[in-house]
Image 1 (cartoon, rainbow, N blue to C red):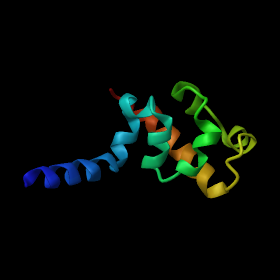
Image 2 (tube, rainbow, N blue to C red; image 1 turned 135 degrees about the horizontal axis):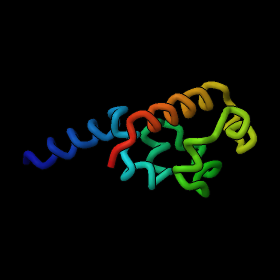
Image 3 (cartoon, rainbow, N blue to C red; image 1 turned 90 degrees about the horizontal axis):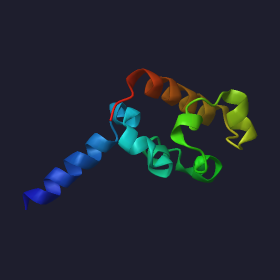
Length: 88
């Protein structure tokens, strides 16, 4: 069936970086983090609104328990990307 192919294609599309700036994805912070492969930090960030989350700085992320510099850098880059490319 071609259905399997199209759903696989949409799964690949979901991992494309431009999609992380979609409001539809941002409202689901656990899924947004999973897209970045940072879902282990879901518990740290899930109680925030995305509008608050993307304003966090390095120190605030550390205070929330995002312990590794690599993860914080990836989040900070992603926040900057979202701010520049936000779409519905």
